Amino acid sequence: MVKAIPIEDKENPPGTGFARFDARDCLLHAVKAAARIASTVRLEVPGSGRVWVNGQKQKFWAEVSHPESFHCAKSSEAEIRTEASPPELDEDRPLEELLWTTAYLGSGGALLNTCQLYDVVELRHWPNFTRLPHAQSLLPLCSLLAHRPTSMSFAYRMLRIRPDEAFRFFSAATVAGHLRIVSSQSRHERADAVDTPASKSETNGRDTGAFWQRLFKRISGL
Amino acid sequence: MLYKILFAGPVGAGKTTAIASVSDSEVVQTDARATDEVAARKDQTTVAMDYGTLEVDDSLTIQLVGTPGQQRFDFMWDILSRGALGVVVLVDNARPDPLADLQFYMSNFHRLLEPRGGKGVIGVTRCDLDRRFGLDDYRHCIRESGYRWPVFEVDARKRIDVKVALLALTAELNPQPHRRRAA
Image (cartoon, rainbow over all chains, first blue to last red; front, side, top):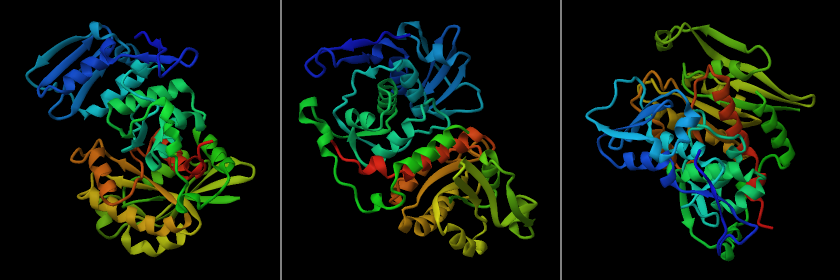
């Protein structure tokens, strides 16, 4: 498991610090590097599995027996080599899914050190949650960020999402290209102040959050 | 209280199967023997509606209503859309032009539901059978059409996939987070 380090600096004074991680310490670094290479790159974590990455096609192929230990491996544990052609495996998958999974699981609940909680971000498109690891609390978060650019700092508190789940999401969605930074602001500029009044269409429909919470809870239990 | 969620999309996209995957009650189907071009795809097809239920609690039931896929039954779409909260549009990735299907069903059900605050989610089915189009193609098509609907790969036989689509639809429908202002 990659070690997450609590950061306490000007942006995060003592007592408000949260854990961050550096992509260079984990498999994510190798995956990102492989994604920039046009030919096929094989990444193997002995005992856990291997993936083949083709940056030109933006695809990957996987033979992973232990997903947690594979995606949480340190970059130094990965054996990397280029290969002439992709493997003869049936199913290729979009590379964004490998980037998501490696960042989401590798994060361990820490925040990627390139992510800024006070940046106002917009969801460009929803992650393919039927094929990706996620927490159910991330669906309301995606809905909010898709319709109204918001700072993560404000969004996860407002939706009462656990910080570790929010940080996993923010790290993975950033790496996989699901988020777009609308404006970059420091903690002291209060990014959440850009929140604007809702449009009329957003306030139509059933008014009570309780109704939707009941329904969400019931479907969660399916 | 009774509320309604629609399942729409072309013939064979998996609407009936998706409802059966999550329904608390046995799905009521209105199937007839296919005699037109649909017969090449399957023996029976929905001609009026499919009907399942999701019991939330003693006082709240969600009706899961599958619309007929064939365009000649589109008068049923209007009828079934009345009072619906939202729609899960299933698109069969193995059909000749699934992106055209997407635009057609998305725009029709958006027109029917949007005035009452209804929202939609896209589920792309049979991705394992045809790999010409990926999710990025659908995302691009949705964005070009001016919508922001979530899109997921869905295997209609898998409850977990249909569950994700329904949770996303519920998240989209809940107006509270979208309108709450900074304290």
